Image (cartoon, rainbow, N blue to C red; front, top):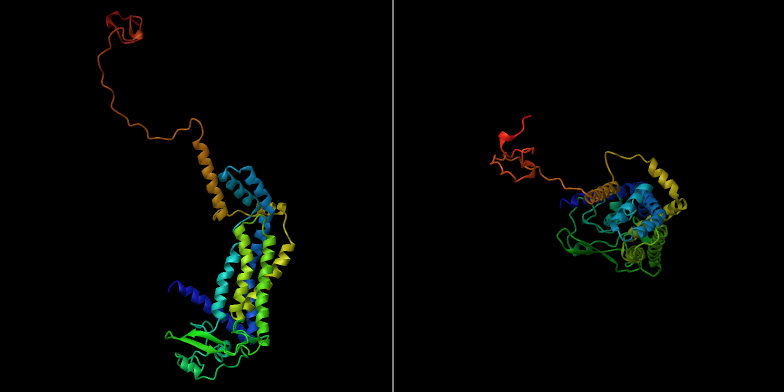
Length: 379
């Protein structure tokens, strides 16, 4: 439960932002659009970094191909040279992944905040948005936060539901409903009571085929904008991308097209608006593309941080150290340092060797210590 506390705090903070925007503009659809713009502005630096990273990788890719061909049989040297290229042009191959990965927790958070019924409630109970939703999905017997909670299906059946949709309608849609519920007079939204019982709230999601049209249109828009945005990324990515990456780019639009049918219309509106923002952002950024010379100049002019090294710099430094260690170990005549020999006791003097045992010691003209000392010449 401790690990869930920061996540619940994030959801409560996001719900508070939604409620505050709704207080300024009491239109649920406009509130979601403005919230989407706020989130995209917060993520704008990461979005710019993602596009620039793809452009830089596209420029450096021909040099990488040359290195891979040159050192085809030496994977270690190949990686070292590629790291040098990244450093020379100031390229970080991992910087383009974060914006894509960050979209999924944001989508999950938005689903938790915009999906009703909620348990626990992430929108402040004293807000206008909570009052508007409580007209359709009350959590208490009279819709007031301090009233007894609804615990049984019989209590829901006794209420005058479905309630008015004026507080959550947008372009002919009730944003609490999904395309599956659209035009269904018996549409219900499921919830769980505090005691663990399954509850179903009847909700007004339209009553004929015409009422389904806006839901289906936005589901198609969610699919189309996801597909177009992924195509933009695919065109901006370096050539020769892996088959796994190609499969992900093809699967994403289909996956979110299915989500657009089952997700609440409010979440579909959020994702479609987010895609439209990204398409416009990438369009203007992809028009301006730096050259290889500009990238190299920027990398040289960029001040190097001595106190804290980046991930790529650390990898390059470790690779260089390993290469130097291997080179020093293979030099001819290089010996591994060993312990110095321990000093031992002086050897004991033994008997003089016999004359003739050493040519230098035989005869009186020798310089050794052999022979009769009386016959030695005087100095």
